[in-house]
Length: 64
Image 1 (cartoon, rainbow, N blue to C red):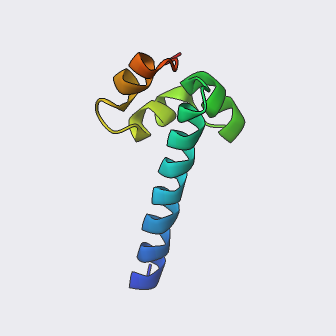
Image 2: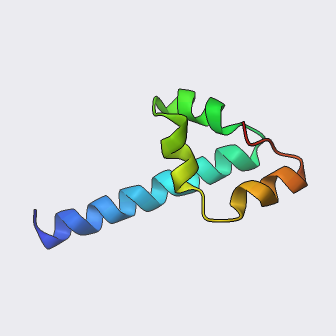
């Protein structure tokens, strides 16, 4: 894998994290996000920065 490929993969990962956070912020649960992206819920959970889930809950979002 070239350096350019690595940069592209890092950018795609960052975009995926932003999408997951945007969906969570819109009120979707981790389970709903996982179903929409066709991935396991644990993968979605791992992409949340520490404390994000709790912050969304206190804002009125749901975790599961």
